[in-house]
Image (cartoon, rainbow, N blue to C red; front, side, top):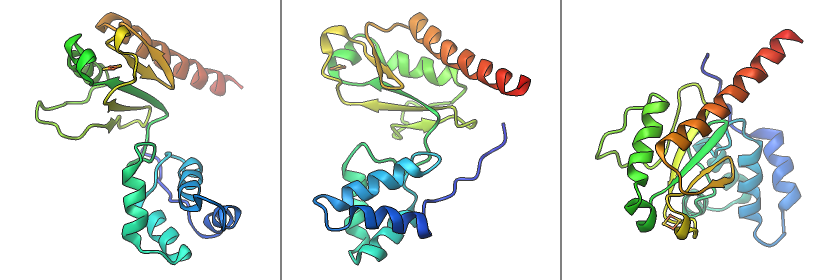
Length: 180
Ligand code: FES
């Protein structure tokens, strides 16, 4: 698949977003939230953060700290599907590290043991893999969330099935577009 252009939300689109939230409580948060939602790859590039800072007359560092403080915000392009592997103690004990390694292998990403980056996106932008400290569902560990759906007691076989199902759905969508 060809790399897609990662265009930032800017100009008039950003003006509209800012005007919609201006003067309301938490306007910086809601502005960032909508700017991220409107971005094709659901993230906030540096250009967007800088433009928001300029337009709101607040320091860039303030905007940047808000964007980095909340885990909801992404500073890197996101894949179409999100897989979140819990790395909390209970899930770790039940093998979540192995699941993270499995998912990297299944999706063809080489993860080093000292890989400090807690998230990665496949080159076709289909999947973003992230980790989380705890889902609060420790009794059902290990836990993996796929596109907002929690899967409990996950093992390698179950994980492979889930990923393959998502891939098959994507393939069938492509086929049905081609036959229209
Ligand atoms: S440690 Fe994984 S859900 Fe709590």
